[in-house]
Length: 134
Image (cartoon, rainbow, N blue to C red; front, side, top):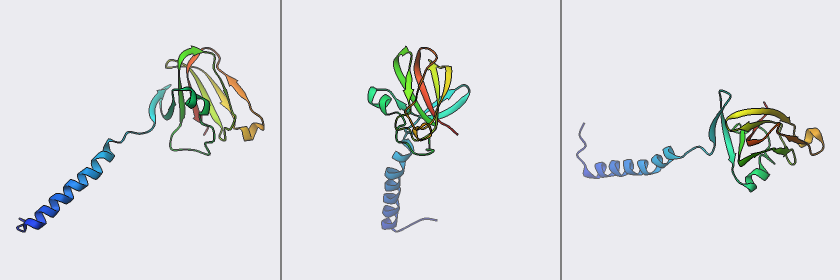
């Protein structure tokens, strides 16, 4: 089939260009989460790489999200302590030395403990992962 009307050809061409301009950037959008493999399982995690993000963590998050939790990257290896202040969901913490898990700790929500609770890494860690408890 051949279209003979130049206005129709121009309109279809313009529609194609507009569609490309709108749709193409959406295909380039990266996930706001980092895919991390831990002990053979893939997780979609928010990242925390600075003091403000380390302090806030998953505070005030209500219920299950479209990601699995948060990974904290620290510049050095040292004993780490996390607390449940303003933590509204139950978490499991994975203490890590590089890519190796060196320990796991449950961290219940503050509504369950009725008080602020802390948990510490079993040894020096440079990464900590908070996972939403299933």
